[in-house]
Amino acid sequence: MLRIFTGIFIILLFSGCASQQKLMTSVAEKDAQTAKEMVSKGINPFLVGENGESAVSLGLQHPENTPIRMWAEKLQEQSIPKVSDLYENLRSENPMPVAEFRAELEKAEFYIDAPTEEGGKFSLLWQLSGVKGSSEYLKALMDNGAKTDSIFGHAFTPLMRAANFSLTDNVIALIEGGADVNGTNGSGDSALHVTAGEFFL
Image 1: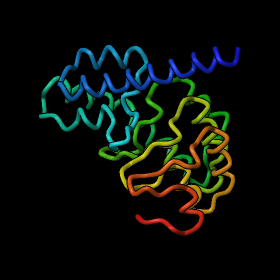
Image 2: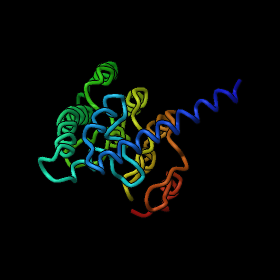
Image 3: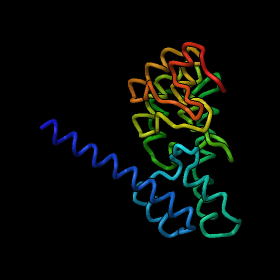
Image 4: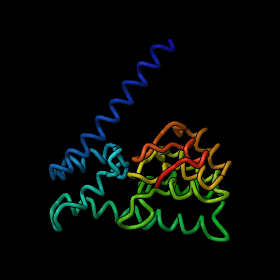
């Protein structure tokens, strides 16, 4: 029985990877219609790949006023202001309660992995991983599908960022949420390197 469930999980995993790659390919080929259809089926356009690019960031590299560029700009306009507002609220002296934050995430009116600023790449989960007292907010993000192992070139993964700031609660929350303790960034550094002080930016 366990073998059957393991097989199903592997199939779903590779299916998701293939769909994400197909979205990236459609954007690279300026196929706005296919990109729209895939996003409408639940493929995350802000999910960052190993090359540090998402479908949206790739779309924004196309010439202005082209269908694929306008598609990316619209998605950015729908999500980034909301994610930015949430980030600023959670960094304030009086952040919203966790229950209210969860309610905002469950509305699903924006993409959870969208960057916290226009032109940026760092997601809300990545940003909060380095903020003290954010462990419950991190759990809420992960419970709602936020990616735990986003890699942005040579920058830290969320787990590396939490370890770098010695935020034990955040580290535990991320690991319990599925973060890869052996995951590395573009420089080959991992959270263990950060903990040991043997990393390079």
